[in-house]
Length: 201
Image (cartoon, rainbow, N blue to C red; front, side, top):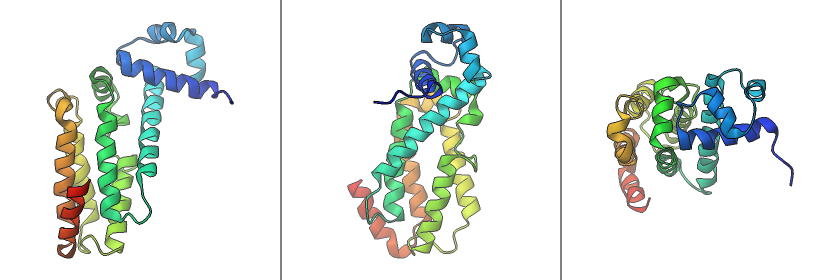
């Protein structure tokens, strides 16, 4: 079996370390925990911010893989979105509070649902276009407004000032919000279909 490239190995180890210990660790403490020198870390990451960026990218890539694997042949836009919307909060819930709180406090730009370049925003946009094209979603839907309102609410839930209140129930809020969102975009002819999917998923 081929060994992971050193940088990938460090990212995986950094992710596990930060999830367990939180983001408050100094670079010296990180190096000590990983049994490397500070110089070795700085050979791969120019700063602690670069480490945070790398571990969030690692986490997001894992979530995207799980979403891709969850898709079934024949899934329409509604079912694809429902499956993805179960995975995202479940994976976030696996992050310990100290890690999530640290990311949201110091590195919020790496964990923002409303970033047009971010995976979640892109996923919602692609799903809207797919649903409109296939006749499941309203043709008159304002894509920009829907994207902004949907992702802004999730940014509110996963905000440093709110996460302590929502942390243990974020998945429930996420699910309820997704349901309300889908009822706002699915056209009248397909509301019964949406209701039947909600009973199954």
